Image (cartoon, rainbow, N blue to C red; front, top):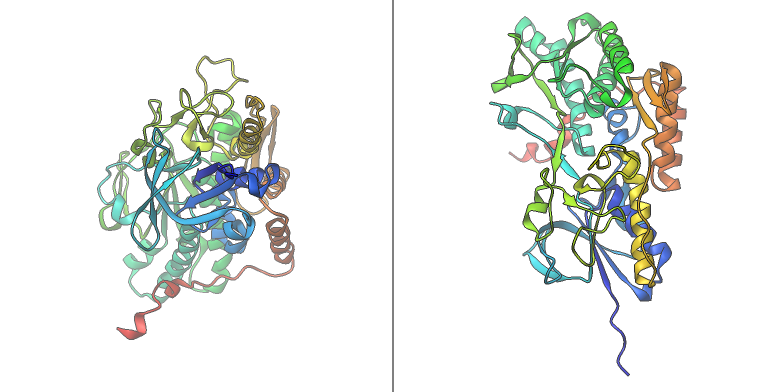
Length: 432
C-alpha cells in the first residue's frame, strides 16, 4: 500500500506574517498531514514597533525578538535566503547562511518577505547612513549615540564635539519620529553623567521631504507632533531633502550644511527585491498582486500577505485601494492567511480579508505620544500608554509579553543604563 504524499508548505520570510502563518498552520493541521518549512536570513522574528524602545534602553533588545525554532517547534526552520522561485515548477533556490545553494521543491508557497528600506542615490548615503528595521541596527544605534557622548565629553576640539553631538534622522514616518524621540530622550537622560556637557549642546534634526509628518494620525495630530518635537529642542525641517552626506558633511536642499557623525535613514520602504526573481505577478510597486482572500492573483497554490503583497482593501471607498503596510494589517492578515490555507487543504473555501483601519498610535518618547483611534484624537501620556498597551498585546508569545512588561516595571524603580558597548562589534581586536 502506497503512503499518500504529504504536501509541503514553503513560507518565505520569518517576520510577523511568516511566523504567525506557520503558527496558525501548526494549530490548524496535524503534523502528519503537512510539512511546513520557513526560510529567513535570521533565526528570529523582530517586532519592529518596539525597536525605538530597544534602541533607547527602555526594553532589552532580546525581548523584542521571537526565536523561530523555539516558537515553531513543528516546522523546519532554514537560516538563509530564497534567491529565486520558479513557481510553475514549484522549486525555490535556497542560499543557506553557510554552504552551497540548493533547490527545494514545494507544493504550496507563502510569500511573506516584507519590505526593505527605500534608499536613494544620494552621495555618501550608502557609506554613512544606517537603517532602522532590524534589532541589530537598534543595538548599534544605541551604542553609537552613547559613544558619541563619550567622544564629545573627552575631546578638547570644539569641531569634533559639535560633530559628535549632531544627530540627523531622515524620514518623518513612524520609524523616524519614534526613533528620534526615543534616542533624544535617552541621550538627554544620559547627560546627567557628563558634567561638562549640556543638553543644549546636542543638535537633533528631523528631515522630511513632505509638508507634514506622521500622516497616519491626521493633519491636526501631525502639527501637534511637530510642535512637541520642536518644544523639546528638535529641529524639524519639512519640505526639505537630503542632498549629500559625504564623510558626514550633511547638505540639505534648503541651504543648511553641517557635520555630523550620525545619520539615520527611515525615508520609506520598497518591495523586497527577491520578488523580481520569481514568476509571480507583480504590481507597479513591485508587490505581489493578490486577491482579497490573500491568494496570489491568477496563480494556483501561492499566497502572500504583509508589506510584500498588494491586497485589495475591501473597506475602502477608493477604487483599487490596497491595505497599508502596517503592523495592524500584518497581524490580522497572518491569521487569516493561516486559516485560509488550512481551509483549502481541508476542502473548504477561503474567506476574504477585510479590516477597516481603526487608527494609529505613535510614541514621542517616554510618557509622550500621539494617537487617532476611531476618529478620536489623543495626545500626551494617555496616547503613549495606548501605544504601549496595543503593541504589547500584539507581541507574539506570552513569554515575550511578560518579559516586556517586566522591563517596563523595573524601569519604574531603576534608571536605564547609559553605557556604550560598541566594542562588542570588535571581538578580535586584541589579536591584531
